[in-house]
Image (cartoon, rainbow, N blue to C red; front, top):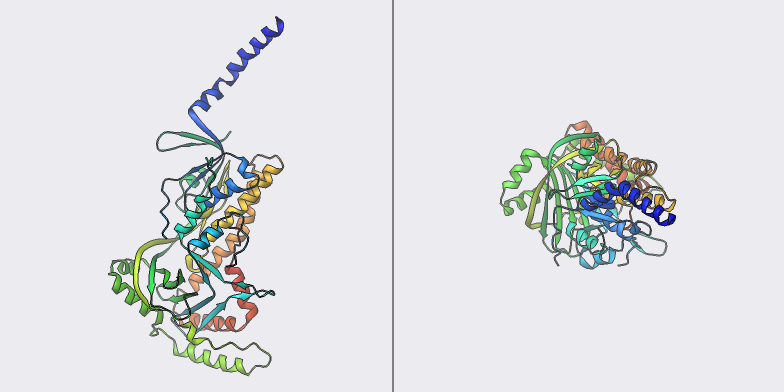
Length: 436
């Protein structure tokens, strides 16, 4: 009798005590991790959460306002997300050479693929289209991907999560709500992106070309045997004018920009010729191979899918706040001249996944400030030097003042002749290395 009474008494008190919680759970959905933003970085974070050894034990909600675009129709490294084979079978183009030069002098630098001690080829990079990456990541989502953070969606639905991962871009609403201070300024430029149809090339299309022109940085990145991707940074007025041109006229202007020499400094070119002659006289140095013919950019036949994107420098002073963490462009946005933007975001995903799994392995809260601070430290040590380096390069090549042209041309020419310096810069440009 006493036991039964005690049980009823406990049940009565327990019902009162847990009534608010029961009422909350009836009106809100609870998750361990909520990921806001369905771009490549947000999708990579969701994929990592669904496939990680320990993270897959967490309930995850993936919030995206856009739908994934339908996908149009080697020896590979071992990657942990398990998407590389699908990406490779869809479309991924090896970059085996890279040529960088400017329009104020004859200075240039070339990079080539390496071979390991076992004669295994190591391409400089792989160029992969956004929609291919998104499709492959989302194919890896598990079927059940699905004081905490509280989110109210547009339809009024309330979501609560122990950790919010903000991957909603450089205009991040989540970052604004978190109250994180941001260092931000505009470059006064827009980057024109497009797909280019090329004249057929005898040796295939495996060379990336980048030229520093007066209006900005111009790069051609190989997509297939006869297609390349364009990124062309221009001042805003020039970009608007280029976007208004018919496609055939735009292609003509682009071809001219790749080969135009009217801005060359004769004094700088004479100095480069003297430097090259002196270099050949030095004993016991690695002489540069004559690959001049391979440095000619391809001819663009047609242009499609043009778009213009405003360029800004964005960097959050902190990558985390109370139960919230920033990844990708929500945390940092750099000038695209080095092509490292989304790679830095994937590096964020890798570092955050490892830190969260470390927290889970020792029984800590996944939103523990100790571990989120560790993630911030790891990433800022890598991101900040790259972001500032890209900004410095932009400023160095945005002037046509003769002393600056002279010094940067001689410097580029020297780096091109010293293999150890070329390897150093190639190593920096290849960061961050992440598991895909």
